[in-house]
Image (cartoon, rainbow, N blue to C red):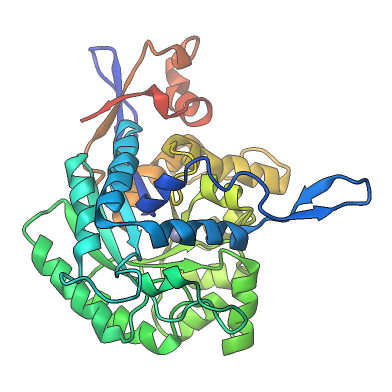
Length: 392
Ligand SMILES: [Zn+2]
């Protein structure tokens, strides 16, 4: 596939972008949680920030606790409008905000999922609503946060009932896919994984899960289950070519191989991962193992899907202190990165194509002085999403 097409009218067409991992409500956090919430004095008398993923999560939980169906719709609409303008046609919404604040389901149990789907459709996006299963609230050493009651279900059957309902409600809309998403190994017990996976397999549905975003999650998993996260998932038989490991940050080489043997995808969310200080995934190992890659906007700290796909390569350069870290068997690195940010992301969401084209004007100032041969390289390595004129 040659992604870039030149048209006689002076425009360039590229496959529409996808973002396979989104939490739309977090769009309402933009600009927050960027100041120290905890300070530690240093020897020099300065105060140093002591924040990390877990202190960021407290901010996020406070937001999650405050949302109403109306404010969730407003946040989702703002998020999806920004994605659409940036060239995105397909979003995978990892949806875990299900219930009222005290944990009581809404009278219409899938109310909040439907709010998010309607917002996406209204902004012209295709959406995979990945209905999250969430059981445990936080693990042994941490008390549950009140917001987590909004995420949690008592039984796996409650999750599957909601997935059934969503599939029935949206079956006539080809722009909506329903998927299944166990939150993570810290929030879902192993015995839930098999029924969730069996259900998703019967419907050939996308099956997404946060995997090893934080070292602490890996350590907890080893302490509790005697297995690293991907080892546990392989033992439970849930890896497949519909499995999407979100983040895949702290893996050992044999875990990358387990994902690769299953032809699973890893959804990397570079602009969020760097904001949260998650660490750098070893993309060279994932690529060498045959893991397919795609990208996600995740927390909406930044919305620039071109920056997300570019960072697959540029972060790997930082990590390895080298340049041009891979050569695909077919095409250039820029072509492969665009494929990962478009077609692979759409596939991760259960669609077979990218659903449209991004249109870029050849006379855009970003492309001045660029030879025709290097147009896609220049867009991937030199442009932000403001280069996008429209999606068709
Ligand atoms: Zn996430």
